[in-house]
Length: 382
Image 1 (cartoon, rainbow, N blue to C red):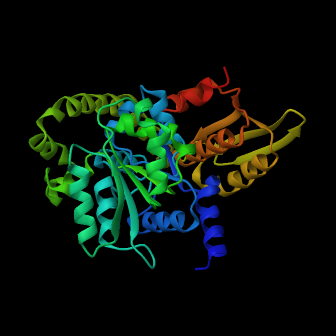
Image 2: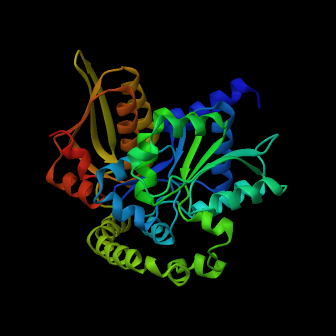
Image 3: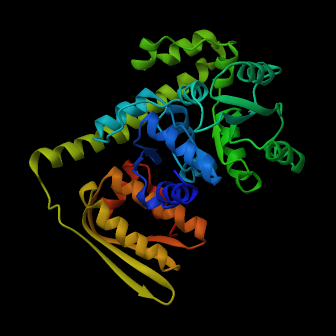
């Protein structure tokens, strides 16, 4: 593939977020793609040299995103969010979302390590990990005939995000010429650092891989495949790292609460609508320009079958280079695929400096936004 073709492909897949096959689930964007497609996206980002932030949501991410707006923002502004965590895969299936496999940080790192980027090894920079861990992994990567070569490592210790965000730190990372920046910090700190450092980094691909570095170094063993597939890897993690029990305890109860209060009501709603055929599937979007904003009115059923028409309308609105108002007064139903599209409109609006407002939501639609975890979109107008 030539450079011009690569740039065009990357722009379609990444810069044009409206074309991204993403679903809005419990306040987070989740991408429906397999490992092969994910690796292709990484290769394209490396070839083009464009910033590409990869986040891998799991149950811990879900719980933090519901209480920490900055953490949630790091997911909303990511370029891909493959699902890491079988409970999220099960929730997706329950809601009829075509996410069929878990793509954990460890799986992604292992796949990149096992094969090379087209024509050469992937140059990786290791950021974080315990004392001496990054050096051990770096030595292993550079000695094996795998798909990665390590071009640098920094252990920032236990300092604050500000301590990790100094010019000398960025200079070392950028001077390495790395293709992939792998961050091995706690999820909260890593996501916050990646979000705040976005404009200071030259490395194309950036991702938080958490405890993956310990698995790569061999200081922690990964759970057997069977436990991974049936969603019990957390039990193995507690065996290997007992201090994690508190996190899993809190996240587990949080997941139960969210399932009972949000997921099951949504499942009942979508299932009832499917079984009874209740409600019309008619859909219409109206586009009106005025000097101060673009008004997009959504009427009827904002569901996946109408997504292409909605993408065309929102693309036109973005190209108008003006503030966008979305009128929800005639909206009757909305599904996770359409929520995913709204998140991409929001993401592009932020990047381009436009104001986005959601107007005139009915009580029924407010309930749908709340159950799906996107009440914050409506609150933005106030």
